[in-house]
Length: 216
Ligand code: DX5
Ligand code: ZN
Image (cartoon, rainbow, N blue to C red; front, side):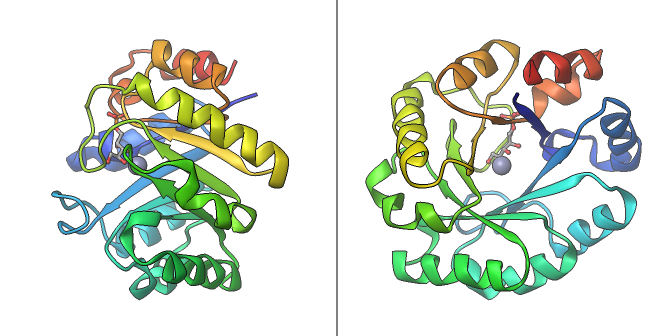
């Protein structure tokens, strides 16, 4: 069974509480929180005070996606703020520093994960897969919601699932970017079990039915 992780970036910023309540009412178990630094990606979003406010407001599992250059500088704050899963991009620092960052997240009692941008292949993350509880494959260039799904990421997704089955079968495999009811089916068929959806979820008239279809 798959898990839907709605991206709160797709909510209405002036009505986050209302949209969070609608998210809970739809029976959602995970919430995806995009953190952008205006440097690793050409956009800015939320800081750790937002994660901390979400943690106080809801029991939903917080899946925090850091799009930050040299994330080691901030992981402590995001772990303390209440992230349940904390993912960092392999491209955001040297591979050795990212490996060390994953260890630090784990030491802080949070589930670590690694993210790959569209141009990054399986080989770049292979040595670190055993340290991860979540691997996130971007199906758009990170930075903005509402972009078109890149179907050409599917061979990489399938290759990562096959490698995880070999070395770390309990690790979640997540996709992020342009996921809706149609592209979500393609991702599940290629091995994803956690699906992020921002615009498609927050635009859906019936959020419970959207979740049930994604999680079917
Ligand atoms: C993009 C973010 C995504 C984004 C997804 O950089 O990582 O999580 O919110 O939004 P949609 O589902 O609209 O593509
Ligand atoms: Zn994201």
